[in-house]
Image 1 (tube, rainbow, N blue to C red):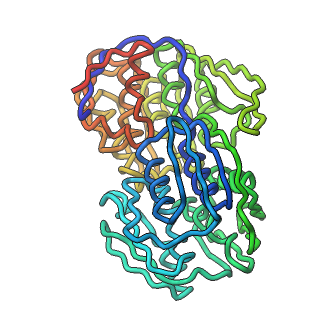
Image 2: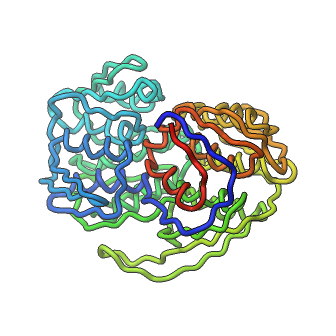
Length: 433
């Protein structure tokens, strides 16, 4: 599907939110490191999750996929892949697994789409230089890693990506001696590190957090198998929350009330803008996990501008820009410069495409300045081959005067392949080409 045409229409109904992509990546890797059998439930096989499952198979792990489920059988040992580890367009897969190149006894080659291989990897290269690990890398080309990862002190910047910290947290517990990760600048996206530590704890590995300034990782730890159900994804729920506020009456299901996901901030941000969100919680126990599930009832609302700090929740900034473009007054999105090194330059992408629809939006170095309107005009826009841009533009169509045509709409396959099916099911008028 390369292009969709969406006619403005009211949305109404129930939506089961897909499982968290962030947690799914981590659960697949942690289960692969454990000696024994793990069953992971509530899995959607987006391109990114398929990349991580395939990568762990490349490292010698028995990963069996079934509808909505992954069964993993492992002896807890990684083997050097015999061919390049294909990460496709998944930054999580690449950055989480690069340190594994230092845990096997032969060179490892990591490959991916050119857009992925051009994203920053320098924090790892600085570590490799200090440890004497050989690597070969040119932008947009495969990465080769050869050498032994050694216990010690690992210095990592906190303002490039928390994914480097997560990658080290997966690898360092297997070393014989203790290590420390020292964060050399204020850590952004802390909640992603919280998610990593929570998943690791579930699979038997403990990380000691010293106020997010440094982390102690005991050596010689062993991952233990676990049956695990992945909770719903707040970053995906964000599209439906904004859709409901713009022109909907939606009930969202299968979210965790006590979730550690940073993108849960969407609730408080939207409420602060005047959004009507009713939360209902109930107890649930599945796959050896007792959780409080949350159903959200989202109603069409008159919203107003605010100041949004994007440093801890960058993935929801594009769809919040849509809400801001259709809210009364001015909204400023600040501390969001990291969006420029995602699948696309998301600040430029969303500013450019919303402007085509008639929004009043201006780029700043680290954010956006948006003057709200009651409606947009519609038009032809492009996803920039970015799943979050494609879905955000689909949500914007709800308050357009004319149709919205989104080219390169198949970008959604990266994280939410059935998004347009769900959009249509709750009342969206979509034609696909």
